[in-house]
Length: 138
Image (cartoon, rainbow, N blue to C red; front, side, top):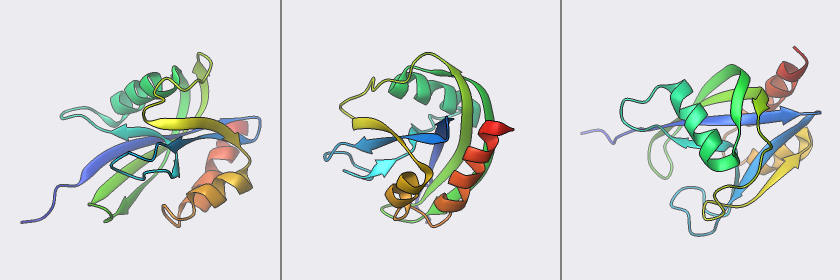
């Protein structure tokens, strides 16, 4: 029997050539203490876009108004997961940390900082950060 795949949706919010990342709290089940994109697990029957909207509202208090799907990343640690990643270039609201129990902080990062923070999570993040930042000007 194969393990259940954790379906997730993540967002790279981009503004003025920077990307918003969250540093997860040390007690999180997944990626404890690591820098990560905003987003999370899809609920049963929830579409990717519904997850994107819900997670960004819950975590950062924003409602996306312009986005582009970038790619789907997959991994096996700590359990099988699939991350559907979006570049979000416009939104309503001012990003703030609405879930301090999940993220110790949110920070706007340069492309180089973000690539360094996300390098261990998946090798495709460097390429996807470039695509997300390019989407801002598109």
